[in-house]
Image (cartoon, rainbow, N blue to C red; front, top):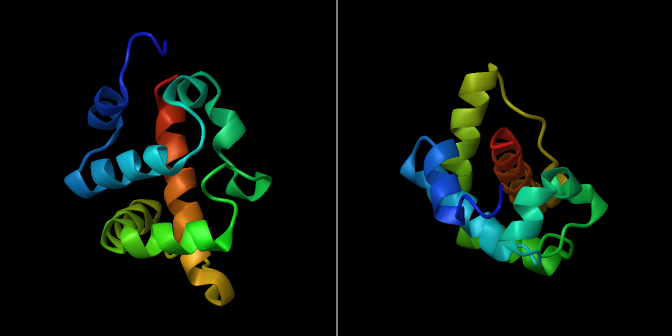
Length: 114
């Protein structure tokens, strides 16, 4: 399947808003894995707590969250509206939580391509 769809095509297919597409592309760019690995084995990357490259260290996750905060909050708001309620956030590590949300949301979209 990875031979048939580019990252940009995937974003167009699975994302419904511009802010969702921008965040999706930012997540894929932040990851240390290449696109072929991600699309061939998305379940390997779906749980941020298992150590996904680019989302392991607070330095990386906090910078990612700060750089992408507007899109994260917009996508999070859309997600919470679709699922019917607010997610429980880790107030002690909120920036890290935002980055992990972005990662897991993007990977769930990649899994929808399967």
